[in-house]
Image 1: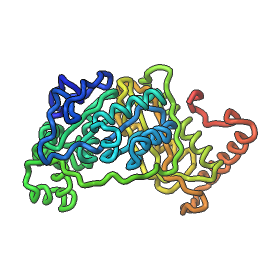
Image 2 (image 1 turned 180 degrees about the horizontal axis):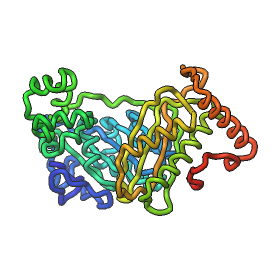
Image 3 (image 1 turned 90 degrees about the horizontal axis):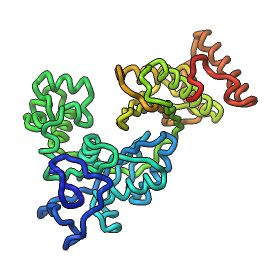
Image 4 (image 1 turned 90 degrees about the vertical axis):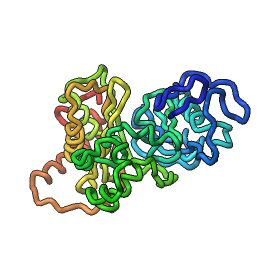
Length: 364
């Protein structure tokens, strides 16, 4: 069962509210009403933090996390993993307390909220955060992992994509608990040795993956926030076109191309969806970026979703001279690139409004 940082701890898996003040210190550094660690039990020391913030603020928010621990692994465009074993002693807090500290600093310095999961490994910390909401820290201890995971759909397990989930469900392994209870050999015969072994371990709450300190790959991003929650997919497409054009123009003027494009969709309930795609070849060509953004958006199948904002981030930027590009024999593609170059020259000389794609949302 998950436990709060203060008295009146919630039921298993419930959020730890971010606004309530912690209780008075109990002997030994604990808090009254909170179960102490069992003998030999590893304390939660991995945090997964996902920010609800404009894409452009991500580097600054990473700096905020680095003030807590240098062992911070960037997970663009809006998340990070932290190993806080050293910070636990330095700050005199447990993992939940550090989570509340991070949230407080993000709100005070950047006006950005976040959702935080804390556990003994990256898998459980990530899934704890996924099960929570903004303004809460969810803690899953090692001894609580089986209960926390048991009833979750198998598709919720990190590393299980749609195709793998369909295969597992077809064999009756529709929950994480059932996958954990299945004989490893059976799962390996269904999914293959490596994947089957890895997913059974994860279903049992085991994840040996370390938190590897890293800086985010060089990237550029932009976000459009709608004046009101947007239901019209056509207006979302127009916003994506404007964002893709802005990113493409910036990369082209800086002599850069991108290997990966990320789409972030934020909803009225403050939840978000992030999708990414590796481009067929490194590019800064607006039509390719826009088409990729449309494909990522349409694949979400948003019917009546109330969308608050959409964001694009071009990742893994490299100098254009280092990119290996296919030679195009299509005269239409060459004509489009010449027109794009002419529009870029006009914008450099007369400003961004001098030329932009027809149909782009002007406010984006």
